[in-house]
Amino acid sequence: MFVQKPTHAAPRWKLAAALLLVYVVWGTTYFATSVVLHSMPPWWMNGLRFVLAGLVMVGLALAQGQALPTLRQWRNAAVVGGLMVFLAMNLISMAQKMGIGSGLMATVVTTMPMWLALWTHWGGERVPRTGWLGVVLGVMGALLLSLEGDFSATWMGALLAFAAPLCWSVGSYASRRMDLPAPAMAAGAQWLVGGVLAVLVALWREPVALLGQVEPRAWLAWGYLLVFGTLIALNSYLWLLQNTSAAVAGSYSFVNPAVALVVGVALGGEVLTGWVYLALPLIAAALACILYGPQVVRAWQARRIAHGAAEASAVAR
Image 1 (tube, rainbow, N blue to C red):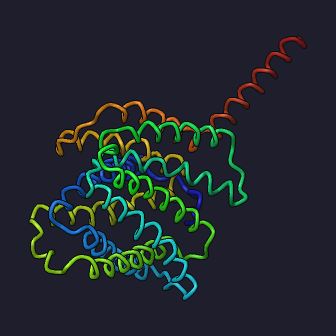
Image 2 (image 1 turned 60 degrees about the vertical axis):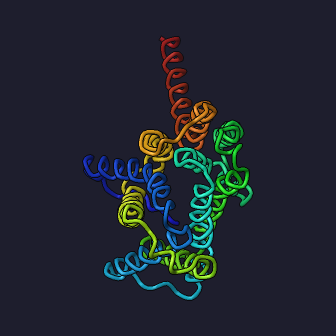
Image 3 (image 1 turned 180 degrees about the horizontal axis):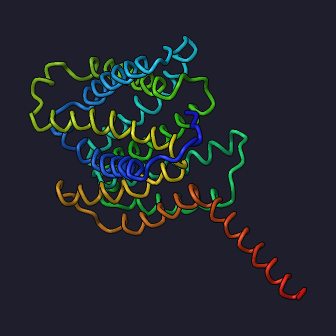
């Protein structure tokens, strides 16, 4: 997705409100997913969610005067939506269905920027040294994370959990290289295509009659995922990308795992064996290197140059 640099300073309260929404809402969606999965089939859960969200988003984009995608753009949206919505989101659901805790799943998803850095490098773009340091730290964190109790109990769930951010990163990279419509329309098209694919799988694997057995609590959690997790939080994130730096907008990666872990333990009774507490700081450091490393290095170099100039001026006197 093409991200424009902010052309004006947004009010601080709007920035704070948007960040709070992304931090808290996205951090709680993993627990909400676990609540839905108690009685709702996973493919129907995501299929219905993203078909409805996609239709709403396309309608909003049309109301804003954005044009419908061309055939080429629909094809590209199908590729990106297939990777990010159909595969990544459903892999997360299946992993949680197999016993991976919501907080642990949120922590695994933070490995996505590491994969994206690799695809960026292999695609011919320059990755700074701090980015590679972040990849190394992230890999170390992921290896420690794989020792956590839920992963050792279900190897298939662990495989699906780590595959989800991999698919999301490939889709994210593809979206940067492909011809897509304006951001709102692109998001709507991707959600719609990914949701339709999930519904097709649901019709094949999950009898429609199962939807009649979904508990009211699960429907409420599903509605939360649809309205807050998708329509509100994701649009807040898109607004942040246009009104602040990408690093600030991407700071949700640091906060979401902590929120998800606290909610999962407090409300879901999830038990952590301790490896996650060693892995999380490494993954946080990895994200810091990838998101903020170049800025820190430039600031340090500028300070060093200024200090050298001051010393030279003092000697000249």
